[in-house]
Image (cartoon, rainbow, N blue to C red; front, side, top):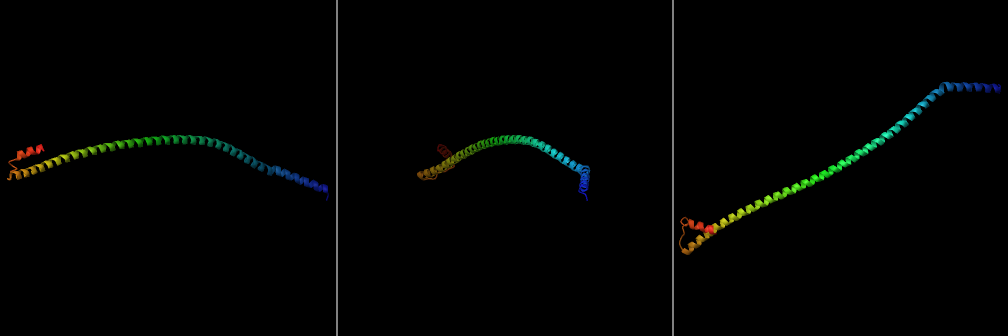
Length: 156
């Protein structure tokens, strides 16, 4: 065989291979590469859009967090004011109740003093009658001397 003919045959086979590759293999590969490049470009664009949306969402979340913090601070302050108001009202009611209890106690004490004086007057009257009975050495009739005993109680 001739080396020139072999080189020529190989060149023809190579040309057919190149033509076949250019006609049937390269276009699908180029199409797939173009589609992949398009998908990558779309992915990058979507990524950029997502970044911008994320930044907007972060700003909105931060604003809502600040608003929530302000509202919670306001609510806490309001709760503290209410608590102080309730405490003051409870103290006021407690002091009013204490004053009522003290007044009732004083009234009851005065009533007991009056009862004790009355009982003491009756005992003194009885002792006076016994003493007068012993002095006179005779019996004193309580029914007859009721007016005298009434005056004696009033004086005591």
